[in-house]
Image 1 (cartoon, rainbow, N blue to C red):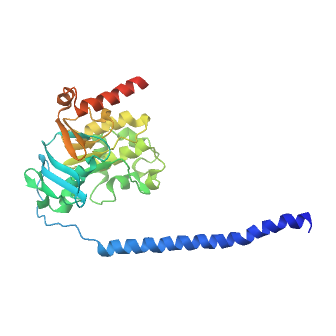
Image 2 (spheres, rainbow, N blue to C red):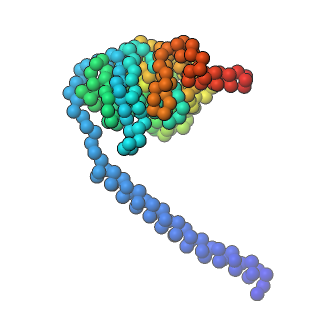
Length: 309
């Protein structure tokens, strides 16, 4: 055997097995697709429709929010929220802080009736939220999440979510309320500027600003900000903070945050840990407790920032 044949043999042998390996990989992919398809069909076939016995469709939600002895669990006998009691007056802002997994997002999920509670009562204006028509309740609550979903289309369509009842004038009015007119005008075609899927041609801060306009254009009675500022780039942070202040002004709002710099102007603050309210009150009241939960968290965050600077 010549040297050339000796070199060519393993090369040809590899070329022989390469398509066989590719066929095996495709078979594995096909198997995973079949299993995933079966799970999707099982989910659709076994899906229980949301219980909606509510009748109220004309009651303003500009009222006090109250949680009364609320217990909640995702899995049986594994409580996520334990005896939650608080009252948030209308037009006031509440900041919820605490460690990861303490139940912060669960509270706002229950307010939207995404899950049924185990026991207790949640009311808005002394009316149990179960008495509101589900679509009506959710139409009066706007949520700004940490992960903003933007679809391929114009800025205008992303703000209105292609709701034909929302006009361009209403979008411009909402933009003006937040002081973001200059921000929109910075795009080549303003409201007609085309965004890529998931807003890939925007920065995180720009995408978040568009989500703020989306949240306020429906004129909600209640506003929820769930970690809405945790992924913002420093360049647009001040603009985002100004937008948030205008968003929550004279509107009942709940803000979930890890960074305490974003909640310093909240009317009330709740410290949540292991599904229990450890502290509730104004920021000044909680800072006046030397060994309190919020006091210690405040000291850790601001002292660490000072040492870095």
